[in-house]
Image (cartoon, rainbow, N blue to C red; front, side):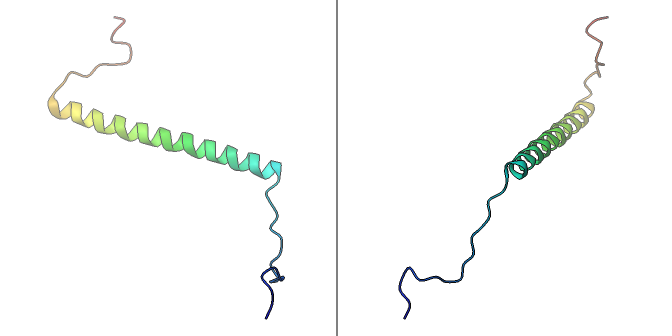
Length: 66
């Protein structure tokens, strides 16, 4: 019967390099920005439909300056 500290043929796991870690962080940041853009677009689309249903006047981006 092998002891508690006997080798079980488990190889060492190689940790990601600094370049791989940076690429993973960059990908995570880009995906986060895309998710935020999609969520804000969905909220904007839902609020636009809701305003049309209530019959509120539509304002343009420069309507406050004229």
